[in-house]
Image (cartoon, rainbow, N blue to C red):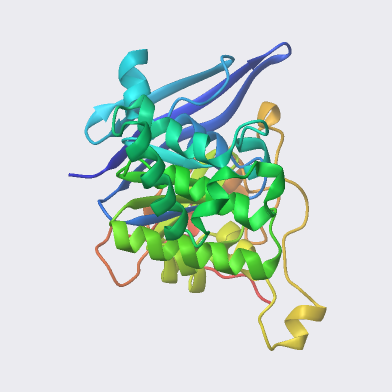
Length: 333
């Protein structure tokens, strides 16, 4: 059984000026022990989707569809059941550790709290467990007595990972966990996450705008644009042979190490993502697409099989160029 299944999930925010569709009809599944990367520009809906998985969105957000965690619909859970599932069934590593930690409480108290709340340990056992968790994430046990401001950014992010692991969840959601870190510390934290996920056989959903990081960390990649899923498939295929023009643009936006030409003349994508309240008709990407056809402005695209080495439905893309019978088209460099 899949650890997580999303069935036609949508998220709409209600604001004074109207309804804002942030996530539109996303369907995904995640197997036990699998790592899924969710990519897209700012405003694509990826973080909103991540927060919806554990109902962490504000009250003005309306969530539709089904979110099945270990076969149980998160959206149908009563508050007591949802409280029991958070941290124990699925936990989250937030983007900014500085904002995710309480500045006036010691690290020991914050890591131990989910253990105590869920009744998984008494006070003394929780302290021992905290020391073990700190060692797992590469920090000395004495750091348990520290306050968040006494730690570096990388150390705080390690604390967030320790908290996520505390109750041995089946799923960890990492929402851009290294965005605020320098490149050396980012590499260390990513290596740590990868190692711990493998050791504990935990499923992972990792949110990022960096397709290259996700390709290295995850088994599969899901690319979002304007709240919709536009490509989904094995990470190496999506990164090296993307079938949607937007996915190709994301991959090309990062310079190639050792290639001065790509560094001096990086590729990318002109324009900005659309305003969610004024989405283009047809394919939302067509105003920025280098290979758009006239029909793209009116055709409501769906995810079609996009080829690849696996089963027919293992790699899909929402582009008219991959629909059955169409000739694949790639933009010229």
